[in-house]
Length: 498
Ligand code: UN1
Image (cartoon, rainbow, N blue to C red; front, side):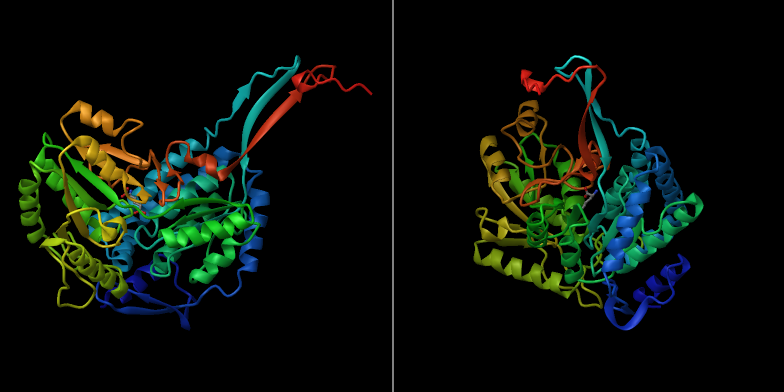
């Protein structure tokens, strides 16, 4: 059976079959062998989708938050039951290795647990009023329908970060998944329907999937009935979405490109650094927004580290991600392979020296050899995110210079340092250290836990999702003042007697 047909079978088993196929819709492919599963009918009319979400909001905001949490708890239960099938679908549709597919569904389950706890902790503040017999408080209210635009590389987990928080906050969700991974979205929606059925009295339209391309995303982003648009993807996409949303003074939450670096100091444990580099530069075939793209190594250890990495890269098992032991699956599509090759060619023109990798494997599907390239400086190609496993290696002699190099790119998502020096580690984490949203010590830049706020600065878009107080983005802050006296004093001592 082809990979795409296996995906179709799993989808049906999860209960998302039915009249979703059409002769002229979105083509569904598996990157594993390039097979196609058919075409999916695109959502023809967006108007009823938004109308249903607005109606669902009017009912859902009246449901107590802990009760809303109960729905997310049931969803977590259903995800546990469907974990193997959904993870397999992630593998088939996005090309992730088995363990990463399972990890992705685990990330959804974890965020469900987090959101359930949150449903009893949507804390506001009480504030002292300057007026006698008054009190002030800050209350977080449900916001309205949330549009989630997700990317192919985390086809379900990133939606779950958004959706689980939005639902406990009282907001319905409209999901526009990547056109490269619609099946995982439809399967997730089927799993969610099971939770809804067990929950009982949730409004219709609490969670909807829109199958379509960029136009559908743009049209929804322009709709003033959607107060928040949360988008994950390229900086180019995010800029377009942000401008559309800003044009109507809506809110956007952006998680865009990264250009993540690891600084390796002379005192670093090189064995650990090699393992961290391998997972973060090559894992998910270099297609995470947190993937390691720049290795900034002290000149005294650069040759030793690069030699070890070369050996590790040359023994990487590349192939069908369903097979045991494979660590590198396919790139998502032919365009990704072209971008990989074009960036390697540009790197060579800009003085780069390929240490290992590059080129395609001769088999069905898009399989490439992850590459390491030594660069003389952070040239134009290094400044760009290529969504493929290319690791640029640069050297430094002074730690201040290393931090300056780390911060010199337009993106600001994730960063890390490998060092045994407390001075270097703390400088890296200081106000004049890494300028990224995520900064790690003796850990690679990828594979963040859901409990922290996830996101980054500059071209990464500034949004924060998942843990910590990221939930506040999905709510409306209301400052409330109550007068329980028999007088009507004005603030700032203003007198206005009539
Ligand atoms: C992404 O690539 O869009 O930190 C998200 C990580 C994952 C999430 C990545 N937990 O690598």
